[in-house]
Length: 312
Ligand code: HSE
Image (cartoon, rainbow, N blue to C red; front, side):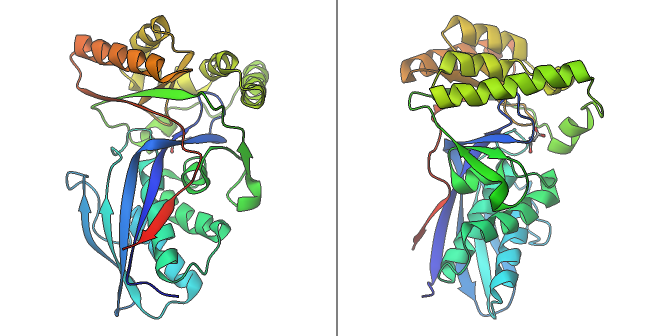
């Protein structure tokens, strides 16, 4: 079955979870990107419009994460006609919320659905990674949760290397995104090339503790493990204004842990209730107001489902 037009939604992701650099990611219910795909007789990918990006993203489909992922799907299915994409960015760019991954996943899912879903999610992972790699490097810790949902352990770039971890039912989140862009490449360039054995042991222990906390649903333990990153956060902290202040203010309102989301500058606090997340969000707003830095603050929850689509 082929359709005339399809709209796909792919969600923001937090990846890393403090510790678990490049191997742990979590899908969020909000924000999200929406990609609309329509058939066109000419082969290849055309980008009709992008909204919500302040004109910052390339409209050239060979340079755009959604365009690259869509082209990969078309090649894999041997399509003889092409697609026109309209990308609605709900995610802020360069914010540590997996913006490029969400657009790539939404485009891959939309184009595949348009042609009757010939590809499975494993193949869509490869297509999405093509798009993500063009912008952020070839790592699947954002793409995998955006595509599959929930919290994923990502041991490689193929579907067999993705493991779904338990999602605690009472996990609530508060997010603050200060109005500065931190390109992923810049945030990766500041990381140490080598890690002392002592640091490796500490970091490995925290990842193990985090996985244990997910399996037992112990959010206090989860927050503790997430905050104990001694390798990546110290190297990136100077790129994220307000980290110490937000962490302290969030903790005072009952947050169980606060981390840099992905490459930053978004900060993510975990809470065990919606009311706590709202209090933490208010505290985050107050911190950034005090610092004189505009920031977008929101509460959300993990998304158990991955990207979805509907015919339009
Ligand atoms: N794990 C990645 C990082 C996510 O922290 O650099 C950003 O794409």
